[in-house]
Length: 511
Picture 1 (tube, rainbow, N blue to C red):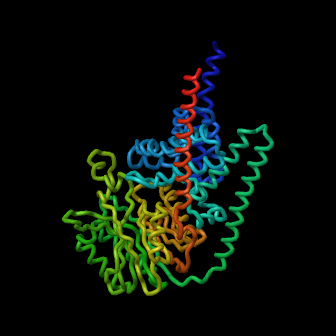
Picture 2 (picture 1 turned 120 degrees about the horizontal axis):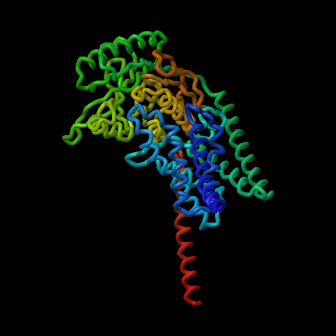
């Protein structure tokens, strides 16, 4: 009796331990832990745990891995509400649950090697997180490699999803070794595949790094201002905030930049209607005699309806508004439903409920054209690609992560921006109110930065983009191909299951 009980306990304890282990390894792969090498083996315990399991248990085990993963990554959300990390993890964790379920469903029905199904299914579930009202594309496997320059060069072919695919493929190769530990043929084949993939990635990366070290000279200067202003302080004053920004800008213009970049919401009140603050900004901007990019909420009427946008504005040296860009991807709940959260007592800090923009604005100066994204926009590689394909020669992201009161959030957000530079082979400049402001080269190398909660400025010397990458031309084709493979595998598995069921019934009738 005791032996049977112990065996039953082992049947769920071991898979549970493995799924938790996968979640821990995945969480440790990302900032601020940054053990990115763990991502190459993090899926193996989960794959072992779901081996031979039914669909329900496969989903549960994957879901547990997902919850552990995202609690580890998103714990900083407790600054908004103690339950926020758990709520987000319950939502995002379900995607890894569906990965496990689909893997068992397809693998149990379709005679296809895990070397294809595992990476395709994983990338499909990552890609799915980019869409919908709760789109929150964080924690992609590819993002774990932001510190490894030779590895991330591959992103100029298929974006961050291509890296996720290759990392999942390596996990699948090692999983096959574990699964067939006594089969020399399977081990040799898996080792050869893993070695070839890693050699290819490193070889490609080294070649690209050599090419871009020999790239043309930098001929455009951007002054990046990081004022580190607490917009949520009770004594916040728009005029004093502008004084801080102005003081830093006056120092920066001594180096004769071609453009000054202030961060997101440098005027917290709605600038089109906060007359005094706007007039003060324009007076200050006039003396700079320069192009000035700044961020602020704005109010506009659309079909008779008042809407508030989170916007970026470009002023000319003559104080003419040359363009406005409205943030397109709003932070789920916190920006598009934040008024309701405040009423319910779930959060204390908010800038109001925003409307999403839709225009692909191109900002133009005599020396170069550039595109702008605002904060959360930067997590959507397709948006950045579309903006640049409209004629942008470099990208500026204006941001303000100070609302999080968490250095971990700052590092996570900043690390994902690195991939937009590599995917498009552009200089990517980030101006953030409280950090991390950065100048990122086309190689993904952070050439200059100001750390978290520091006040200062730097001059980014950049070379405007002149060509297109494969990613520019074909976008997230790796993700779409993975999604197509997933749909076809599911359909094939359903059809095959139907025929097997039909043959079983037919055999039973004949007997």
